[in-house]
Image (tube, rainbow, N blue to C red; front, top):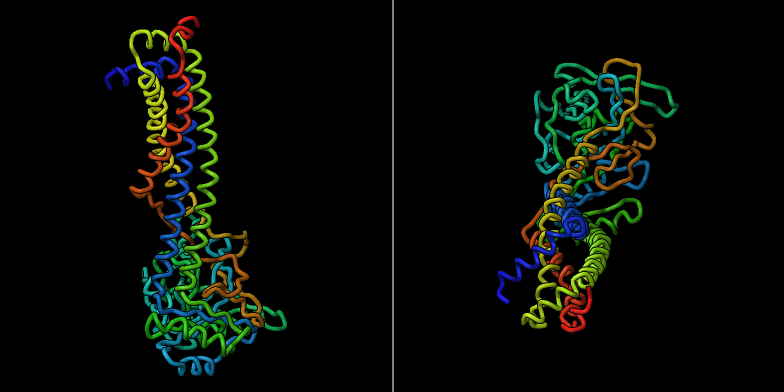
Length: 435
């Protein structure tokens, strides 16, 4: 039997039973689409995390205070004197809620010197309009893009350069204090995980300390002189502060993130593989039914000179054809699902949680000054719902596509192996007696 006859006979049988064939292919499509979507999504998330961490640089060390008293300039001087410490940047963070338009938008107040802002976020921030704030006690600030252009107003600008927002803070006696904050600039949108630039109000350290009723700060960003000195410097800081501080370097975060994403990927692929096992059982069942229905036809083929290997090749080709068609369709569906889920996740993360308010203008409400309302700038505790949004694109590599297609063919071929062998072992005389 030549290959043309093999293709024609295999395709003709599948075409005659279109509903059964379509359902069989659908089982493969679901399994392959699940694997492709999950792998491309997790690879995209991993790449986004690594890209965000790389903006801080491989020599960055983040230190957050575990004490309510925080850090002082004496701490920065002590860390600056350590060997291999190149740059030491003090940062004060606090939670906030800003009334943008008619809704409250969750935000983070960041106090940092304007000269250190680019180094702290790895150059991952630029000004949309206006200018930066002065390094003084003036409460002028840079407003995050998502605050000035909240999703609740369909991207319409609610805060403008030259306007002012009213900050309401609580002192130790829980009395409310009002502070007017001029808006000096609005930031461009920035995809940052560690620094929630889009949902932040950034001002000088002195202004943030006044606003949050603090005389200290809760974060220190340290740049080591080179990558080989990051771990020794981090260990030295841990020895100095012990349990009073949390020390994390970006290399450790990147490795941990990669390990977590990898574990999740394996788990999800195993779960998706179960659907392929179900598909394999379905294919085997359908092929066995096909062998039973075509027993008389197999007897005729063998009486005309078809050998056992020809009959086996015919049924194996049918199984592989189902795998190829299901694999191709599964790759297309999986790619579409992954991009759809990525778009939905990005849209959901860009929507800031809010609460309705009857006030007008823009208002910032911060947490009590005693705790500082520490936000998760450098891995410290967070009592705010605001964080950097995770925007990512699925990574559909050639290896994923080829691997998914090969898996689909292997599953289909393995599932069709026993029915094909059983068909090839039928005796012609016994098969011809079957009607």
